[in-house]
Amino acid sequence: MKKALAEALDARGYDTLTPVQQAVLAPELAGRDLLVSAQTGSGKTLGFGLAIAPTLLGEAETFGPAGAPLALVIAPTRELAMQVRRELTWLYDGAGATVASCVGGMDMRDERRALDRGAHVVVATPGRLRDHITRGSVDLTAIRAIVLDEADEMLDLGFREDLEFILGEAPTARQTLLFSATVPAAIARLAESYQTNAERVATTTGASQHADIAYHALTVSARDAENAIINVLRFHEAPNAIVFCNTRAMVNRLTTRLSNRGFSVVALSGELSQAERTHALQAMRDGRARVCVATDVAARGIDLPNLDLVVHAELPGSHETLLHRSGRTGRAGRKGISALIVPPSAMKKAHRLLGWAKLRAEWNPAPGADAVIERDRQRMLDDPAWAEPVPDTRRETVDALLARFTPEQIADAYLRLHGDRHSAPEDLSEPDAKPAPRAAFGPSVWFALQGGRDRDVEPRRVLPMLCKAAGLTREEIGAIRIQADETLVEIRATAEPRFIKALGPDMSLGGNTAVRRADGPPASGPGLAKHKPGAKPRPKTDKAEARDGATKPWRKPAAPKPRGPKPPAGKPSSKKNRQRAADKPSKPAKPARRNPDRD
Image (cartoon, rainbow, N blue to C red; front, side, top):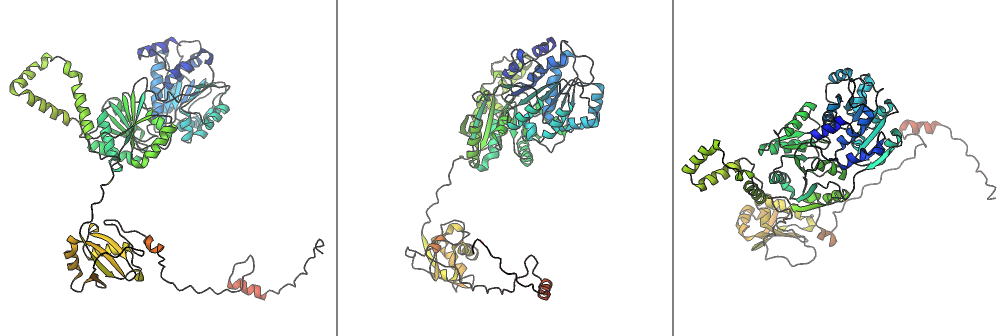
């Protein structure tokens, strides 16, 4: 390893290399084309930065004057490209390297001026780099190494044509490194086409996948999904947390909700400008914001310090996306938590994603208000500040408080002030809670309405008529039994006076349906359509009627359409064509052809 690079690593506190870094620095792979599969957060950026350094520097310890770029590093998103530039800048700083960037969303004129001044390494996104090559503002003749970072993601985002163009314009005598979380067939074909005798380096295994990340699948009722996100953030109180959503609309909705609840939150989605996205990430890095709500594409490849918690507000569409999302935490030896919010409708999907990703999750209900309060209490009691001596600068104030208030008053005031610093947790219902069984209908009376199956009466029509015309509620209406010529309805006894008053002296419903008080419920048997108390009307005819042989009203069959002479084959049937066919003399019929095989 070059002396300047080793000193840069020491200054940053790197005492050991990650497995992927050790693999690409093997002496036998020096200068070779590499196809590397490594999981997110494994130190790939430093890995390829160290791997291409011998190719760029040769025997020298430092870079010469900046001119045409010696290396290209291509990343799928702007955020990842800017992150790679920052990493390579401090890594190559001692060697005197100039690192430039060409990414979409930035001023292209500034990038062109930077390229004109010269750069040793250019970090770019595929589309913007192709624009610079087409305009002639970047010279590729001196390229010695090309790195494709997150190659699988670039193909998924539709950059295949741009990558093939860039690789085709670069010199063939170069070192080409492809880094990818997975190596599908498309990546293998790309490597075969644009690499020479590439060495396959695999540092991912199913057993060690995201070993520093604890997965929690949190079950929650459908109506409490957003409340569960609030409680998860409060329960862990991570220095930095990222909440993943599937759509921009959900990002905006959740950002507003969290902001209203007192969280320092920023949004990250594709609808934001590059400047807005940069400011959002910077707010997370300098501590002005602690929660980032983002979509998958916008957060691809970002690396935030102290990011200890990833929350999947909505489950991703694939297990690869689940791994990429979760890989934002648990980086560089730090422990992280990946929490999946799982409502009942997403239960099967969560099991599939975890199974395909070969991950084990701890299944529990989402933390409720009591759990969050208890966690706050434990954090407060475990705070190391309790063991620190009282400094002289605060001694006078401490003595004044003790002289004026009792310890109980001081403790209570402290708890109130401590609670005001945090958003109150939400009460969550049980994720598997079932609706309470319906209470018994109670005492009731029966009424007979004129008309039954003879008038095609159905419960779905009787129920709203009783509610509207008689002023009853669904809970006050019991069974509805449809017979041949009348319909029997069960009414709660407490609603009987109101029902009779609504019928009026003529005992009619709606002015045209006679109603009488029945002696009691009808005898059980076929032909009785039932309605459960409080149930919604059914949209179709009751099945009991269909089973009992009830038929639909007779309809007169439609008269057959008159058939006229067929129009000539191949011509539209119109009056004009029919007239032409009549005026045209008919040809004599040809004699039937004889088949000698049959004669």
